[in-house]
Length: 311
Image 1 (cartoon, rainbow, N blue to C red):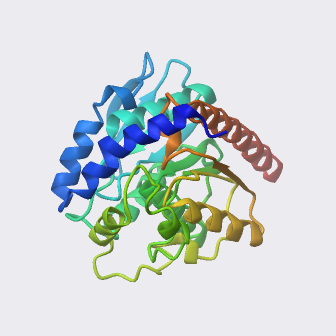
Image 2 (spheres, rainbow, N blue to C red):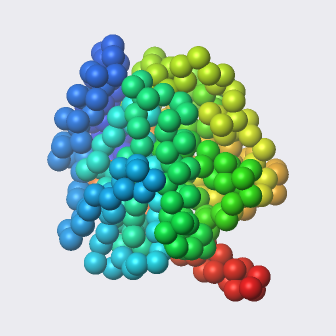
């Protein structure tokens, strides 16, 4: 239900995010803005006892994000959002820690290379390499979940598709929060919600997209997973809000996955903004974390059962 708290939060987000992003003319300006917002108390509620430890896989910088309940064998590999151009570690780590707590998992935040300094295909190459390195280290695919928000959702799904095409062991499931799936921006919501989205406007979205794309075709399936064949994938949980430009990126992806025989759960929430599960002060965020955690726990269990039956 669209609540007064949602409306108040959207107005706050509009002031501190959208209006200021719209005035940015470069990636550097965007990064400076996001860095200041990442320390904005009204948007962050860091879990107590969260532990963040730097590490590397395949020479890619990562962070273990753990809670006291985290176990050693279950891992949520998380690709953060930020338009492929920036990173909000406080906000993203807090979200990952909460899901790790409810699923007794370890979180692994992948700090992939950013655009425009390292445009496509640097980020997806690194994300794919991190997953490969986890397998080499002995982590079991049935104990791995891929997850990501916005641009990170794109990278999570791209990684999954690369794994399938390479006939490599697949993770137990994938979680996508407001994923970027169509870089050609053909979804209706990109235009019908252009005035309503409290997070960013279409021009800001296109600036970030162009930094990542360079001269590549936006309809390349490795760039826009919506245009890929979506069969043969593990269970998928997709969520988005009704107030965002990218709502149709989530809806159309889920519809295509389902039409191609996929096990996909689509959760569209009224009144909430882009990547709403990251904003813990919203009751809808807390509800989403519960649903995501239930999905992950079920995916672990089902994948482990299938693996035992196969052996």
